[in-house]
Image (cartoon, rainbow, N blue to C red):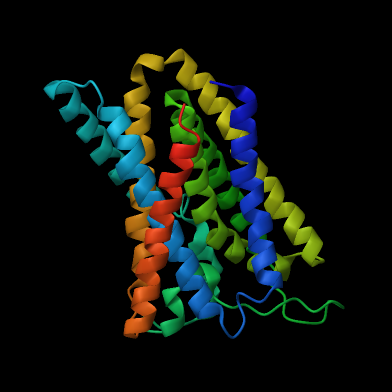
Length: 281
């Protein structure tokens, strides 16, 4: 396990996802065509997470395990899903909730189909536009915890093999982009400028590297338990995909839009497979 590789992968996933999110906002993803772009981005992320969990992490965890070991790993997988559900309830893991709490939409408002990418007013450059007085630090706190946890998961995957590590890093990158679009939207309403918001969210993203270092150190000392670390990582990816991303894609769509969603979901699976093969070692 190369520490330099872990640092590069975690920084790429943590900070790279912030810069990609900022770039997408600059070119108008959240504008008039934002709904379609959001759906495609979420579909890509869901496919990447599902493929990493089901085709990479779990097969590696179960390899060489006897019947008792398989049952124990399934128990860890189940426990992980429950654990992330509880974190979600506590609003510690999926911090995207904070992006739309104050918007006042009803439960059937169509705009809630994409809470991470929901349009928010841009702060006025002279400071007299709409601005939130609070909420920014809570978003940063949730984002920092989330990114640290992502680093732990990436390091666990690298401890098994570079192939798994790069696949996990891409999956994290894909699902963090829509999250960071929401983070930047909120922070732009609580910061002095677009650049200040970008710096704040980038610093939170940098904690992915800290999580990677901590995770690598922990896995090195508990290497016999690596299959259980991989099962926990898989439970995280499955929970995010099935409980967070895919429900946002369940709005009624035309046949053409549905086909596009499926194609982007398939693209996420294909990219993870390609990354895994290219980094096979």
